[in-house]
Amino acid sequence: MGRVQRSLFSHLNECLDTRLTEQEQRLVTILEVVQVEKYVPKSAATQWLGRKPLDRQGIARAFVAKAVFRISKTSDLRWALLATRNLRRICGFIALGDIPSESTFSRAFTEFAASELGNRAHDALVKDYLGGKLLGHISRDSTAIVGREKPAWKVKEPKKARKKGRPAKGE
Image 1 (cartoon, rainbow, N blue to C red):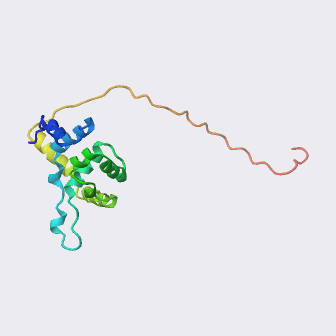
Image 2 (cartoon, helix red, strand yellow; image 1 turned 90 degrees about the horizontal axis):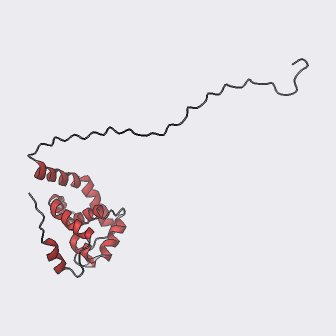
Image 3 (tube, one colour; image 1 turned 180 degrees about the vertical axis):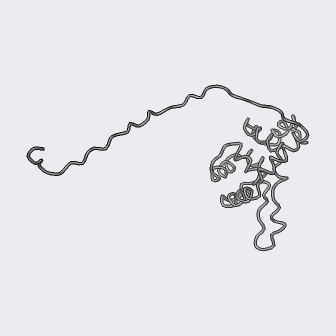
């Protein structure tokens, strides 16, 4: 069962040029607990044609960072990695040249979705932390829900069809 080291941040701050922000500390904690690297598919071992794909472990850490920092676009994630040295180091990219292109990120994220990386990591976490425990909690909410009701449409009676032109005498 994985545990988070309490003294980890002081050691990280010594290694990095700038101190970690609150959000970066949260990311390090999440990466330490989740350990997404374990669940990254090893596609390079089975591939025998073409260029070998880049190491997916750093990209998997960036995948988690994208969720933690609530970054919507892959291009924004790449810009954040290029701009923030601490984030780049946390994800495992040492130099600026190590950061993959936007298309490489997209292909890797597609592979992660196809291999259900998030589901496998989540299932393993639940199994590790809650495997032998029984959860018996029921939450019920009995508050009234105020709804907006619209008035019913009035049914209009169809109009009688009239003849065109001038009415005849006696009409």
